[in-house]
Length: 134
Ligand code: CO
Image 1 (cartoon, rainbow, N blue to C red):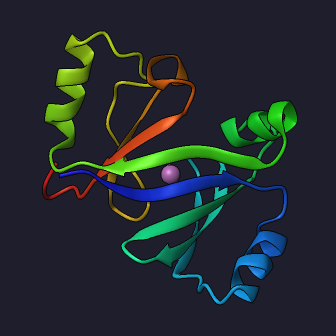
Image 2 (image 1 turned 45 degrees about the horizontal axis):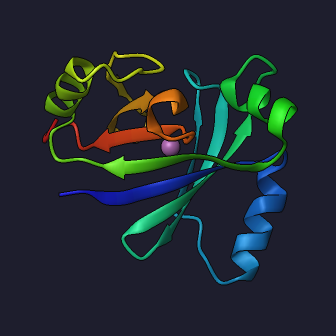
């Protein structure tokens, strides 16, 4: 049911980070700018999972704040779930703290929410699913 959809890594320079992973032989599947999250991102497939490189496009983006506070590094872990609305309902009832309980749609078309690190053992956890399934 679950799989690791991607690992989100906050970087100062997307170009530089891409160069490193490309030098390992990984390929950039796509790049996009998320206006909502205020990031420029690149997805690099690794088997059935992916690395998501995130560079802030604005000083008030969550990723910019993360970089200022913690520096570059692992920003979030994203789990793929079958039925996102059902999962969110279940976790709300369990008292889980979300960054926002509203399910959002990314530019790639997938649905996502973020669970606050306070609920997960210190990791910002993203849950994602295909819109058709969610
Ligand atoms: Co992500």
